[in-house]
Length: 288
Image (cartoon, rainbow, N blue to C red; front, side, top):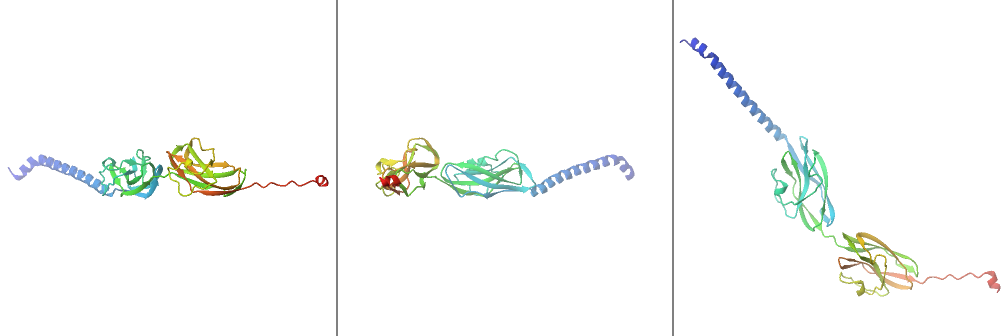
């Protein structure tokens, strides 16, 4: 059989085989190109979360406000971002596979944990903090099934102390004149059953501790309006009082909170006798 006869005999089968080879090669190239394009465009994706503003300290029973951003390209929609906080530091860099549940952060700002948010975008979130101590926190966002974390920061939650403060009080007055006193009772919100301004003609000097009740002082008079009723605090109180004798009076504002006594510093008040105007005699009275 000549070479020409061999080519004629094997021609169609060889051509078909070549087509299959070319087709398979084209499919492989397409697949490789697809993954190559994905790799290229995937490498172009870049997202980050960054803290803009946060408090260094807050008082117990108050809101802590955080501002943060989620940036990156290409723009997309996310369903979760928050500030996550905890009492234990989560050191080191957190990778994109680290979920909040895999950290020591047990609290979070609730506003944007579940929704639809188009990024880039700036967020503001709040959380009420009631336990004193140091908290560690990071900003977090879930973008295309990957977890993005900021650096770790910390803030201190300080125990808010109860306090009584005289805001305004007279330093002098006249017998039977209505005198007005203003004082604040501040601290963790609660309800108290007694607050007043206590007066006496004798001084009770020094700092009065939380175990010193009014009966243990020399103050024998008080503004009665708030002395025996339920009052919410924090609150500003305004009370009036009159004095029926002239002299020097010593006084302090006072409140009973959770069974403990809170006092202001001692102040003084000078009460003068009332001036009696003399009647002007009439002409008829003068003649008489």
